[in-house]
Image 1: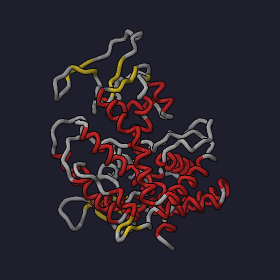
Image 2: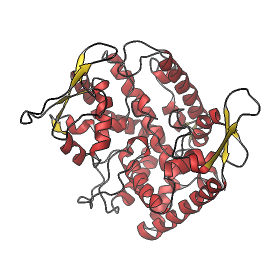
Image 3: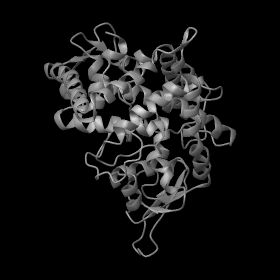
Image 4: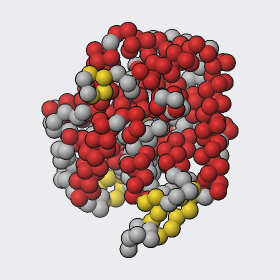
Length: 402
């Protein structure tokens, strides 16, 4: 069985989406640097939030409705964007309730209590772009077509056109409205309204990949006690033999922050002191974790069979073949997919130092994240099929990027 055939459809969709995301994010970062606005931001921020602000202010309530997201999640993301100087919030003039303020602990500036977080925001507040936010939107808007055209040039019009048609053939049959990017932190809202439009031709390539992956995720999580992002990444790479906790990011293709041992994974693992070191821990699957790991494989296969019956066996077959082709086409010794993963000089993935979003100086944490990104990028370029994550997890510290 080929590597592509062995990977579930959800993993193929995820890996193609992450590869496109990284290429677009690198180019966005390069152009923002040229504009004098350094910082790493990811395409999902545009697709699920910023694009709704590009024509003028929008209330938080309306923004959540347009983004097909909960107000809680939108407020969290707005807090980050506020801290990164991309948006500003304006209280409703008709609301005479006072807005509490306090001095910022670092700058001393008097800001609203909760500035830079979702705390204290009210649903009727207006969200506006800052000058930096407007510049980001100007750069983002044409990039989706430009990067897709790079893929057309790289893979050929027939192959890339075939992938787009295969994605559109299935997306047009999905009966619910879905956001144009996978939500941050592996979260989906669970329920979405009925779909009103069936034309997928206007969607970008990452939007098509995202909507199919989200449709798969929703179906998977109806039957699984563990979310797909957890099964596809950390639980997939663990086994009965203990591995070092610090090895998990390398094995999953995730960042250290998204690969950490959090509360959601605790029921499925056993954590023990590392017997070969004075510090650190090792992790292995618990009996429940092994059962969930087997369920992940079986449920993936079952959903793919269902999709063949629902959407057409030939259409799912063409989709899988088109996605798999991305991981085998070469130019000489290098995979074509790897060419787009090589970062431009001056970007953080190439090794350039840059302050964390919202900061002016390069602190130790930013330097460590730079080293992590460089190491991750080298793995992706060397072996995209083996190194790219099987589910995208967007890291807040990377501008909601991979």
